Image (cartoon, rainbow, N blue to C red):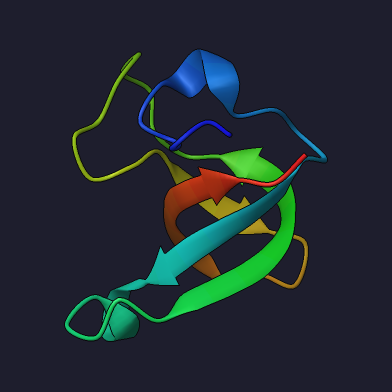
Length: 65
């Protein structure tokens, strides 16, 4: 299972676990489907930033499928 730090691993329509900005202190994960990839660089140490289909934005912690 990929950890979401490499942009090439994150695909549109993939199911991912993200951490929302307000959940960063606790590390609480939110599962959703990628609607848009917001990070332009090929890697990010805290996870690639994505927008889910429901509009929430966060950094990918795990790619489920």
